[in-house]
Image (cartoon, rainbow, N blue to C red; front, side, top):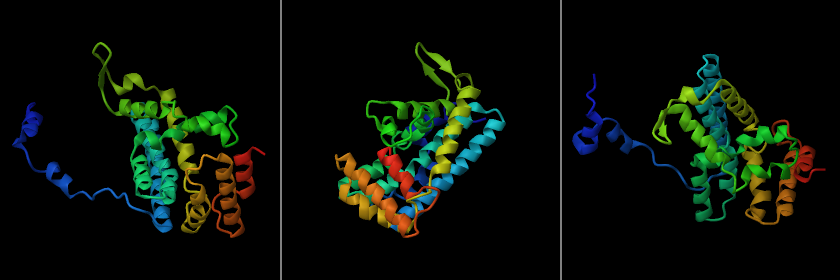
Length: 251
């Protein structure tokens, strides 16, 4: 048995090896510029990991491990949110903007915002403007999902010292709904605007209007990007230029 006071001893400095030493050897996090090729590699890695996490979550559903399935599904949603941020890193105009996007890339609550997408679609969302709630700065849905992930992994004391366990908080219905959202988002990732050639067009069309407050200009640039990608035979996935135009302008 490990003595109960081992962690206190470690905190007091009486234990200095193992993980503590190994942590010093980890690679530093990268926050520099990305080329289209590097971005395409990063997008592919995120999509593959998101799909693998969904498979793990589904395996846990079969075992009726609702909390852990939920927590892994949230991780999958976060991974599925990385491609969008990687594309934003490509558009950064200076070091400050680039560092802000890398910070978002490593923020749990910035990567998971799209988890309400299935709900919005279920309510009839069909255009870009219909999806505005995803990025509503007044909404706390990103933090709610991050909290749910923590609940899925840890016991906790809340309120008037009421102890909770994950399996007493997360039920089957909630677990299946989060895994379903993760499955949808992971399957959608890595389609259009994910290859090196597509991302070169992404930079060409979107960088001039990056951070623009003129929403119509941004929509025009995005439509032009998809149109050129399709005309050049570069557009991947099931998306088409005409569908994107309809999505952007609601026509």
